[in-house]
Length: 100
Image (tube, rainbow, N blue to C red; front, side, top):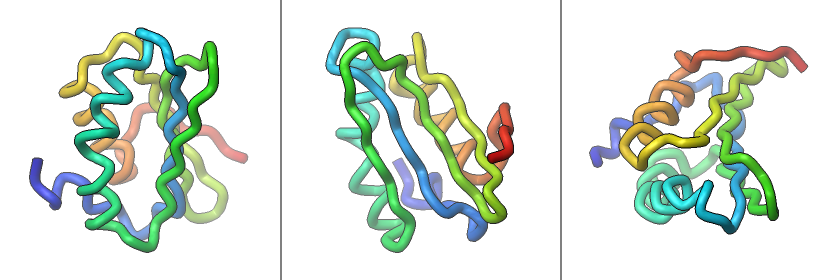
């Protein structure tokens, strides 16, 4: 994985990953184990939060300037699909937007 794949947009303020200890989040945990060091090294000033709780459906949230937030469900995705989804989301191109 190239470091450029996780060059976050300047408008990004925070990334949060929610997942569980169970099999439903295995691909998310695998992705984070492999990719977290690269993401953090490429973006040392952006908080990357990992929240693990029983029964939680895997999901990633990206919070941008002005309280704008986008999210992407990671449920049922493979490690590679998660990589692609997160890469798009942190660049501000993710699928869903919610306002806070």
